[in-house]
Length: 543
Figure 1: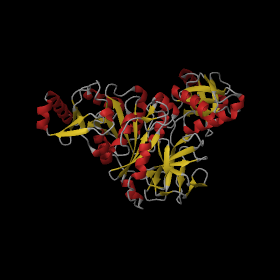
Figure 2: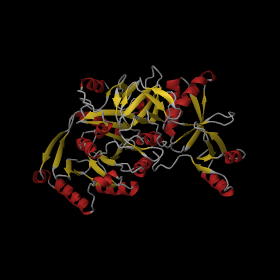
Figure 3: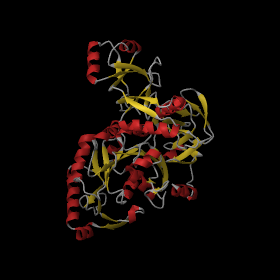
Figure 4: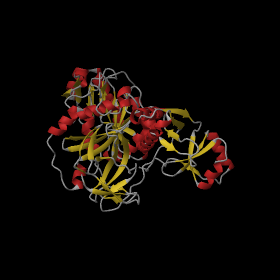
């Protein structure tokens, strides 16, 4: 991380315009999504390398002999070598500002990823050439499709044996509903990857490995005749593949890409840096710049309107020494200046911004100004919640950010009664962050339940309660599998029904839990007058 900070201090400052519209044109705000082990975090590291933010890519020394990536900062991430929370990286490059939102790869943290997608204008979908589209993360890809978010695809790990790329194109279209339109195509089969055929000019780009992929890959560009002479059968097969793509119309179309119908596809290997430059340049060229956002009334808020931003993520204890709480805000309009007093939309109270920061993983630096598409970190924003709006002068609210319906439930109890206060503080913080959904007994007679999307969220909750709040806890699985919102009469009736439990969320909504989908179906059939609705709003258009 020291390399990142040193670069920030020494890099020349790009002159800023006072016009938010001009600054927005320079920005690209995108998320990277993938299934576990597809190479998402490695690709994030290589973007830093190719943008000049680090001299050498890869892992940096952590405490002891452990090594970690720049974007993985939480203790549990370092121990397990996985990403379990989203991070924000801002990278100036080629006259642009890249706001890269790195997300968890594991399905169990799909809600955190979904919140991040609400703040992004585009996404990069990373697929392992050996695995393709995996079922556990298909939901996240479907979210992009439902929101008609422009998606670029990176087919990764071609330096290892894998599946036929043409077969993977069919799988992407059938399972996600996005039609891939390859921009680069592999020369050589997976495991014998020679380079790429750039379909835009027909030339061959050959890559040379560097030691550990720590520096940019050396490239040699050959015309088709030279490529055929040197690569022989591998080049001819790549050309035949591109001819087939031409015949079926799998060619990039900017309008269809921006509409979320097609996905420009690039191939390579993030580990060896093959193809990373092509993808990074495509983000600058193809990904949309920030535009006016639709507010809660359905009107588009112009970029030049007074400052407005929406909170899309809360993270506690990024600085364990100070037990702070940071709110991540996507700038939607206007110009932000540190120290300006904003209005907290839900309460109407003034909100000071003296402690505004730009964040790279767990490292932060003072942020003096920001424009549409940028992400601001506001420290110790105690009353701010996910989905809240902060604005200056002109009141505005944006549509709420949907939550995923919990699928697993459990009771958490502190092991020590004397640590109950710390336990409750930690549980409240984890609920605010979206690590768990806290479900309280309306009468306060039973211990609260926590709901999650996946099992690993329970593990993270226990780990963080113990290490960040000093409150070891025991977890007891609860038998419920279904959750529905219930109106007061329905909730009252369900209190007397076996196999159900009525609880209350932090936002005051009453939630009915059921032990099986069959029991829920039977109750709905026998009591059509009961009002039971989905816990989470529909994903399409909800962000």
